[in-house]
Amino acid sequence: MSERTVSLKVTRYRPGQDSTPTAQSYEVAYPDDWVVLDALNFIKDHVDGTLSFRWSCRMGVCGSCGMMVNGEPRLTCSAFLREFDSQEIRIEPLAHFPVIRDLVIDMSGFLDKLKSVSPWIIRDTEKDPSEGEYLQSPKQLDAYHPFTACINCLLCYSACPIFGLETDFIGPAALALAHRYNEDSRDQGSAARWNAINDHNGAWQCTFVGECSVVCPKSVDPAAAIQRLKVDTAKQWVRSVLLPWGQK
Amino acid sequence: MNHRKTLEPMWWGLFSAGGVVAAFLIPIHIVLLGLAIPLGWLPGSAEIFQSWIVRLYLFVLISLPLYHWAHRFSFTMSDLGLRPIRKPLAILCYGSAIAGTVVTAWVLLRI
Image 1 (cartoon, helix red, strand yellow):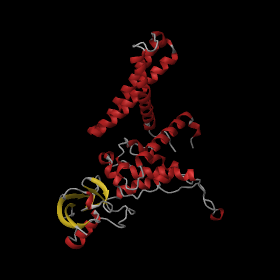
Image 2 (cartoon, rainbow over the protein chains, first blue to last red):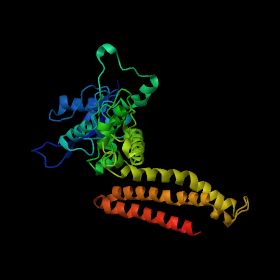
Image 3 (cartoon, chains in turn brown, cyan):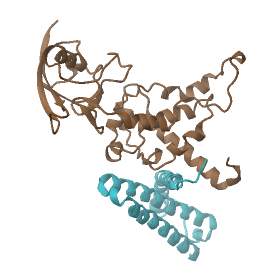
Image 4 (tube, one colour):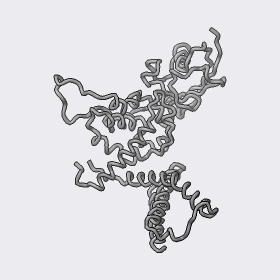
């Protein structure tokens, strides 16, 4: 297999050693079927063992290896080196997040936001298992299924200019998951998610730029989910004003 | 569950309705009042403005897009760097839309 060479310009930040992030270049010879993550692992194993980055499955399922590749948020396990024309590829940590070390970002803020929308099925009462499953029609499944594919890779947060300006924004993935569970016919927890969604830092912060949906590697379309949440929330708001006695 | 925690659903609802009016009604309105009647394709007279339905239509046509502007302009200015004065900016924008609505109603009532 023919090999070409590329220079990876990787952002380094070692706390206690570097005061600010710096860029370090590594020359890598690569076969045609290598992705950016293969090159980073090559560097880690053979050139510089101090380089830190997250990865796990290597097949676009775990959502760990998101990084900025030439300024765009990508899963490095699915970004083939051969698709870049340039002799140099910039690899940086995901934009808009605090950096822990090198290419490793701090995702604790996102995990708190995720928890705030209770992304799980909430029931008022549980059926006894002997009564069988909660059945759904194909139509009921279609209502939420497109939003179930999120792998929490955070590419949508790096692509979102609003999140870049306002880090308190609950963000595309968390809102898409809120919508996913609100739309699930087995769920009865939309009231528990209401406060997080109907907040200035919830759905209302979104101005429908739509880049979240462009970069999503699983085609989740968080932008559509957020607009649907806005419509649902506005309708409920009108209902609460017109029929105030109807509120629990 | 406190459904009235924030007024943002109302502002967004007005923004959204204003967008629909601006996109669908204004082009038709321009064709009717800007081309069809002046060029004689359709008969027209100032008498139609005496109709309450026409006045209601004009009220919707003029006022709702003001809220569309207010919402879009306030968010765009925030994104362009005026985030620190987001609240006074919102008051100025939505306030202007409310003022425009009052003036529209006043003018239409006096026709």
